[in-house]
Length: 204
View 1 (cartoon, rainbow, N blue to C red):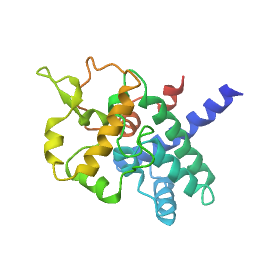
View 2 (cartoon, rainbow, N blue to C red):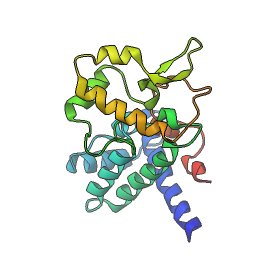
View 3 (tube, rainbow, N blue to C red):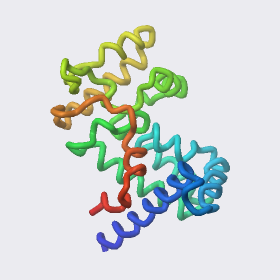
View 4 (cartoon, rainbow, N blue to C red):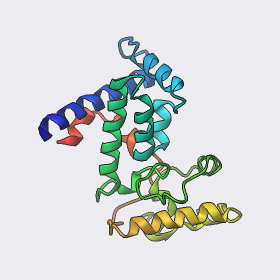
């Protein structure tokens, strides 16, 4: 049964990938009502767009959306839950942890979540992924220290700095490798769905 569950999750992920491809390249791919239906469902549930999820949000935000969609469209709810599961796997994977989204990251302190103002401030600063809260060395590779440029940008916002520090400390406990990792401004979700192969292959 675990194999069947993974197959179903893979099909849900492929659905999201097809919808996203049609949103990105509407003139190249056959017309479909799926993107419109999804956007209307998200609007009805007062949730961000699919593109916003992929560009900015981590698994906990995907799970929140999945819960809101459950009574409105079970198929889309299951698809968002499948994506949350995949993103959660990538958060502590040795090759992809640095591209995980900050907003909605599993290791974010539950007692000190990001406020809407925090989210807007990070977007304004162009800070999306975990890699960007770390310093880079002379070779452009991540170094296990806070990003001094970001610290300077947020110098008048001690609360947000403290939240990012706690997040970094939680991630450090996972002992993930820094070698060959660089600042990655694009989040895992978007990177995965823009790939050439079916996203379901990431479950294999």
